[in-house]
Length: 177
Image (cartoon, rainbow, N blue to C red; front, side):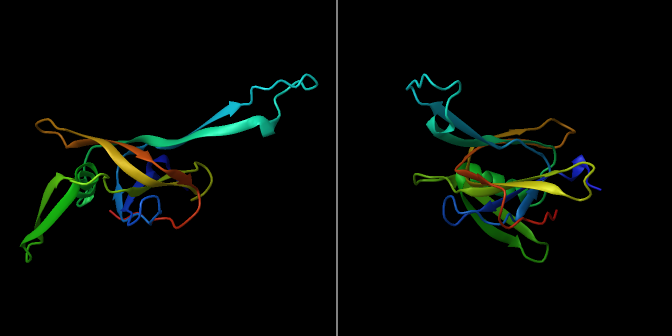
């Protein structure tokens, strides 16, 4: 049976902006990314009808945006991906291969665009066995990253994103932490 705690958020870096990939990094947190569609009705008046004809509705704007937040503990590699999304450039050096110690250096991107990511969020259907609804958001770029910490507490991370499109089909990542 699916539980609400089975919710997951996955990120995967895209080679081409807006082309969805399967996530490779999974985070504990809350994803609130959604597609907002704005429509406009035609201004013409047709006296013989009581309601606006559906053919007169026009989609004027698609907006994918939202936050991935409430991340109390950042899993190994997760913070690296989030900092890379926020800064744009990461250089990794192996400090000690026998102990698996790496050094990541982050810097601001000198070009125009930050790297884009595919974000998947899975929401379990409670009472429906193991079924989950998985939404895939392609072309996502990090607009803000907030780190917070207090003595004796875990590092807190909050991110905000904007994206290109939303889909409910495609390859689904398998969470591994």
